[in-house]
Length: 297
Image (cartoon, rainbow, N blue to C red; front, side):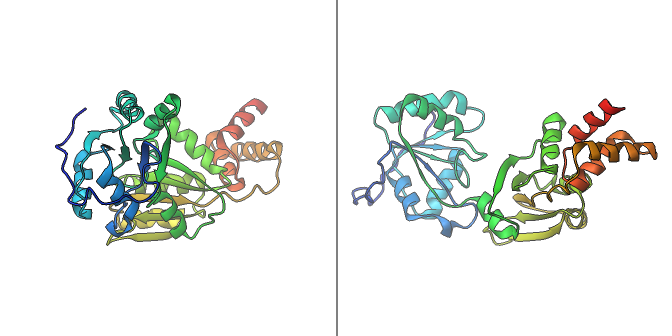
């Protein structure tokens, strides 16, 4: 394991909050932008951990300095490229009695960040894990979107291309819960245009960027309007997309919807385009309608 030299905190002998290390492994949320969101519990964990598993050791050192925390831990990297092999080693140290803190660069580890495989290894080894909750880009964006939050799903980072992306967009066409997604700022405009074309330009959404930071911005509106806005004024910084749930089906059966698809094809539309249009209008799945239409030909 790579590590930095441990440093003794000037108040290392201070009493710890009760229950701070009831479990040998703690997954701790770190600020997603505003350092004021760091909790006292996070500071105490950083100060007293013996091993800190970090997505990026340099970012964690910067966080400690910014928070005025002098850690005494061994810092080890735990990122997407080494987590599969390193998780077992870190869990073994915890099983031997070490206090292990797991952090990502921002937000809660394990949520589209390293930590998931380590969590699985700990469960398999019977090593107890707890969490120190805090800032989350997912729920922050959901709350600020102005969209329904009683039921929502998180889809993580959008696949960049191919069948996986196509399947996800297909699912979103009929998704009955609000959906939160992560996207690169460089691809946001193209994604919004794709969503407007495939999910319906009138579907509500929000583009949340730089959450909790100085230049935080929430753009709310329809997919069509948001796509035009992103094309004219490109989105910068870290981006979270929130997509409104699909409108309930208007009550037509699949057989009736397939009939509409075939009618559009008969009038000159390509079958794929007809299936996509009918699916968007009625909150149905494009692929299912397309396959059913092919079967009825």
